[in-house]
Length: 201
Image 1 (cartoon, rainbow, N blue to C red):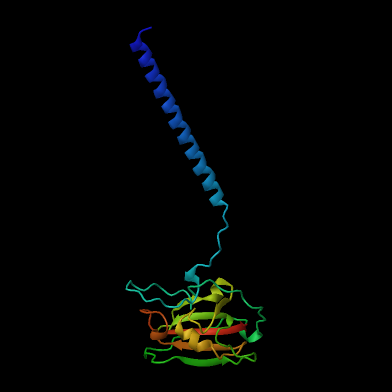
Image 2: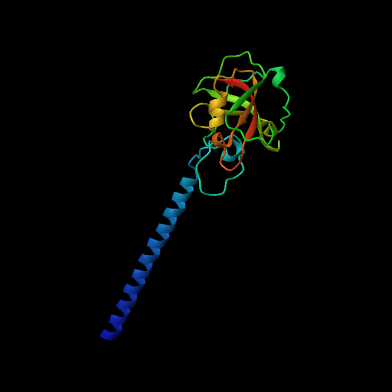
């Protein structure tokens, strides 16, 4: 066999060996990523409540305002045990307030509560119904979701109208909160809430 033939044969073997080495590296890389992805799929994911289903604190934005869904951008805290009084067992009918612009928060007691007064920083569990103040159009309601809403109050977790309006209310009360736009959602106008305070802890 000639030296030229042997040299060509060696080059071919070296090339084949290099290709085999590259193939092994590719296979190992693929296996590594497949195993890693399978492990990451098993990582527990924290459950969160959709922000759109709560009375969220208003965030400053240049974008067009979205419809407010409820008074928290934060996840709902654990609800306190609730013993709903008979006077709060039926969904309230909420009417329009009129076309006069609100200049301040107005609280009107509809059902007097007999429980303790809500303190700043407590977690409140409440049913509420929200309408546009001028027209009475329903914008949101915990009644329609079939579950009360829980949030920490007085700490900026919800709109200012709730933080100012709910502190001091008694558990077991039903209160109408007429909230000027400045204490609610930019671009949504004045609002009327009827809030049933079911528990506070």
